[in-house]
Length: 149
Image 1 (cartoon, rainbow, N blue to C red):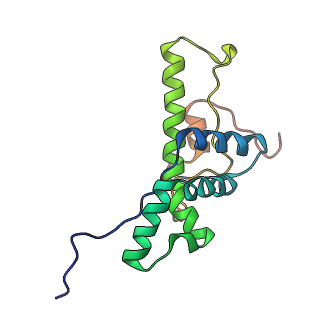
Image 2 (cartoon, rainbow, N blue to C red):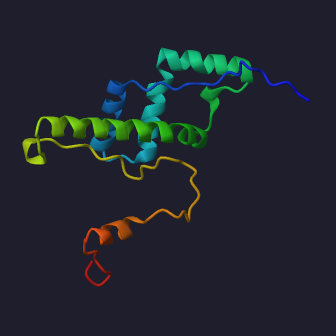
Image 3 (tube, helix red, strand yellow):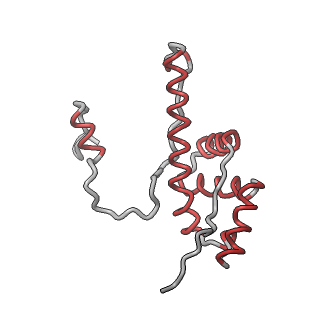
């Protein structure tokens, strides 16, 4: 029976909130999509000294260099982290607006996620999740038909 090391080394990706927000805003301004946002996040994380050190330790212990990951692997690793961080920032902004009784007409706008945002990069299709159209119908939103488009 093989022995499993109790000191397995894992990598940790650090995304500075200010840099992350700047990258998010940059992507939104140029109407970029989720993959371009993840590319910006990758650039941000590989310049962070803590991420660099984490990747070096991971590479030494596992002989796998995260700096040589394919784009697909980067997206798979970064998508959940970026999605969760962005949702956290949105919530933080909403809480601030609620606390100070600010409304959209006061300029209290929460940024959207880039087009195509998804928490899990390689999520299988055909999931049992409720579709956007079903949710809109629940709230009484009239969806355009192909005749009215």
